[in-house]
View 1 (tube, rainbow, N blue to C red):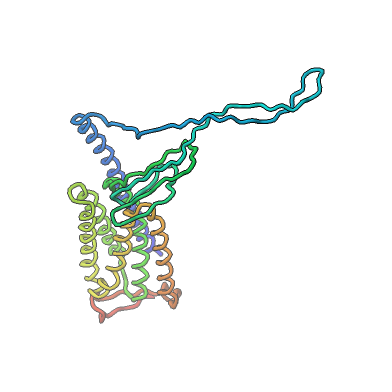
View 2 (cartoon, helix red, strand yellow):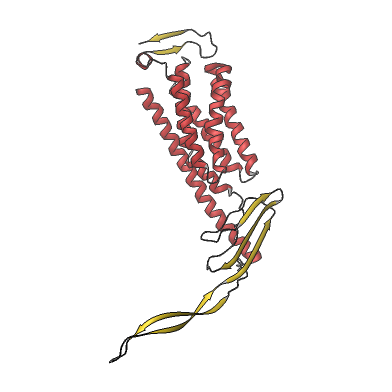
Length: 310
């Protein structure tokens, strides 16, 4: 139990470090954006806002309705009253938009196109109405490039979840493989995870977003693999530790590139992790497992001698 508490304290320490890094990234992004905006405004002037072409259509119609009118001292009579009504209406309306990109979105509270399709050249859509009465806009939203600063901050703030998954799965693999990991091993593995986010946060200013992510992932995985091979051997490091880190660090962080699908990807990953761990440990006698510990005399190599302590 004391060992679990130490590992939990290590995880909390890493969480604090990531919180500090994420906060610094948020502040740095805001300061950089403000400074660059002033430089651009000084060179090119303030932002220009151009409104789209707008048109209005007004149709005057006469509506007749029947009312009962009763004058004082007379019998009630039925009479027809004509009332003029002004309505905004467009007839035989056609609007067709063609783009050279397929990542198209629509503004909030706008009118959806009657038909649209994605083709090899991009996207095309058409708004077609025989009669249209609306005050809602029609149009599309242009795709925006990912902003590296906020993206790096989001990945950093969610890093403790990634490390928690990694510690959990690695500990289960160590138990089922009858290998012992010291809390210092977990501490240094956490540092290797932190190295990924630290390198990504500061290399993204100088490299393309994709290349910065790849470089950070490769460096972190090399740190972990070349470290754990000293006490679990190359085979365990490559066959078990490396795939786990690839899933819970690299793919977990890459899910933040998929706008709108990050939460779903993490949820599916968590469910699959639970399923895999349940199948992996289903045959364990947990009473016996926690009643004794195995300390290897030699960390590397499958033929290492061990001694058991109850």
